[in-house]
Image (cartoon, rainbow, N blue to C red):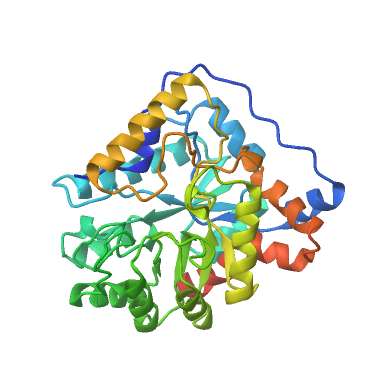
Length: 374
């Protein structure tokens, strides 16, 4: 069974359109820093977890939030998850959906395939859409499908989601098996096609073996630090350092897995960023929220649909620990389109240099994308 997070979140439709959420006040120094930075969310997308538009098209509020966000580019998941009979076709359909959105809003959105496209997105003030796959099960063991997705514009791919597939074990598989023969071949094919290999959602052995096997730098686009929170979706220090030593970048998410239990907050996000910088170095850490650009309105309707989405993930066997109905997929302090600007202000207040903050906001991922994609 395959469950796509966008499909689940889009199921929370039928709310009336609401005004654009205003970002908190920021200092002129923070505003100037943010405006000049290349801002990259390594796992996110335009839209809202409230899903006012029903998931069919981006609605005016969601487009307004993209304009207001200041985000240069994001890695948008186009894949359905799992090995169901229609997963490949659903994923191709998702790419068609995003192509249509770009065609509808060419002044707001653009597709990104190269580092030059990233620069064009920044220069034009548009959101660059980087197509990414969060599972290789949809390949059905056929590496020729990698070429198909390359031709369709996909630039990032994860060998596994949470469960075991033909490539290897995902993060929640207790056996922690390593890469299979197919998994090693997949890494090699992605390297050949200059597609970024992403070990988010991978088991520890898959991470370690894949990073070592890859001839190009890799990413862990959205994760946290296992040393701070012992959760299967978080990355151990050894693998984080291995990733950095080979030129890769880890993106810290804003997800519930930053804590053992309870709602994650800004302090949790910052703690994981600081630990990642301590282990991997400031040139190898970025941000991958695993959310949407628009903020979330905690209405009764949203809470009901959120609980239904959690139940569906658990029934499909793809949920991770601490996916609870009263723990939401965002840090409350960063619940608006300019969340990264607020975070930049928080890091400035902690004495971080503007150079380091620019790296975390997106310069590190921009460098990685350029090295891999060309």
